[in-house]
Image 1 (cartoon, one colour):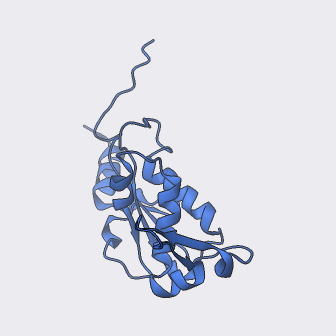
Image 2: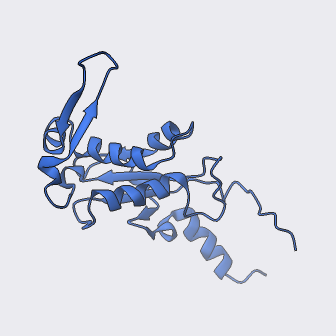
Amino acid sequence: MSQFTGQTRLAYSRTWHSLNLSTDSRPLGRLATAIAIALMGKHKPIYDPSTDCGDYVVAVGCNDLRVTGKKRAQKMYYSHTTRPGSLKSMSLERMMGKWGGGEVLRRAVRGMLPKNRLRDDRMARLKCFEGQAHPYKENIVRLGGKASMAQIPEVKAAFAQQASPAQ
C-alpha cells in the first residue's frame, strides 16, 4: 500500500472560520491557541510544517476579550527601537483602550505561530473586528468549529443531483 497522500486542490482549499469572542467563554490564551492551529492548518490531514495550508479566521467581538486573574492590569507589552533608552511598556488595559482587543489577540496569536517565513502570511489570514459587523459574511463556511457547508447553494445542488436517481 502506498504511503503517498493525494495533494489535490480540494485538500489545500482554505475554509473560513468565524469566532464570536462575545459568546466564547475561553480566555485569551486558549482562543489564541485554537486560532493558531487553524491558521497553520494543523487540523488538516495534509499538514506539513513547510507548506502553508491553513485556513482563514474571522474573530468578531474582540472588545469582549476575556483574561484571567489580574492580567488586565498587570500584563505588560514591551517595544524597543534598539536605541538606548527607547524601551516602552504598556499594560493590557491600556493596550485595549488604545488599540482595541483585536491587537491584543493578534499579538497573542503571533507569539504562538512558528517564527519562520510563513508567519506573516498566516497572520494576514486572521481578521479581527471589535464589533459584530464584518465584510466576510458570505465567505464563512465554519461557525465556531461547526461546518455549515451544506448551506452553500452549490453544495445543495450537488447533493440534490446525487440523491435523484440517475437514469
